[in-house]
Length: 322
Image (cartoon, rainbow, N blue to C red; front, top):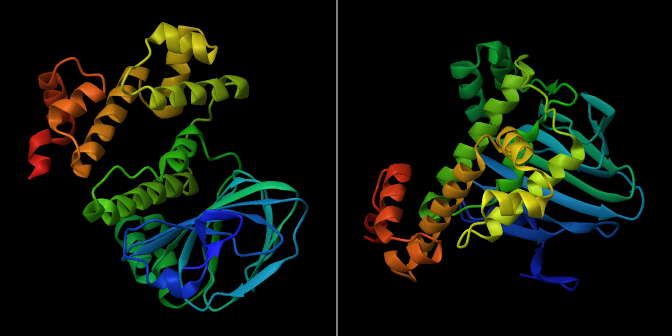
């Protein structure tokens, strides 16, 4: 595959290559458009494809148009920046601001997108097969049963998410989406499950069960995310709560309270979960024995690690080696 001269770790975006990607395998591409720099992450399964694109521009770009010749149901999430989108017969110069999201179906139509200002723009999009979404809408979402009929008849629609309805749980979802500590054979299942989780979250918002908005001040939220990054970097030698509190600049009470609100678990539970996920990845890699992995991840005794692992995953660590 052709290399990008600016970033040799990425490949140029070519449709024939995308269509040949093994299901469940993640690929990363350089953005193939001259007036913007960035990258696209992509994965495809039997039922859907995910495109996570980050682009950096020095100024607003010219509109870029393409024809949607394959009928797919889209879930779009504007995570950074803003774009102006026109979807033929459905949206006219609609502004996607940071935090905006929708479910959209507009087959066999022309689409145009324009980045509106300089800086970083990130949009996360899921493209679902129509027959799959029809089954989900008809079987699990009675509020959206009429949408199944529209999909069956190729009738376009768009559902706009309410403003400020992407909360901290959504932010963590997107931040962690590409962390795939699984064997190659399970990656397709992992991504299918994650997208169903995202669809459930989005539909809950769209039918009116809006999650409680965060009360965490923005500056403190950044400190909570920094604390999370410190945990990721010290899985083998975990910081104590007082040490973590000192380094991230929050007192222990606020750290515990805000961490629970942002990530849905306590600091200790989050640490244990990430250590066990890291252990599972190392076991699948097959380069180290169980005791080495336990000690490497900070467990004083391999027996403690094995009990925690079985409680979390339902199997012993050694059974994954077979």
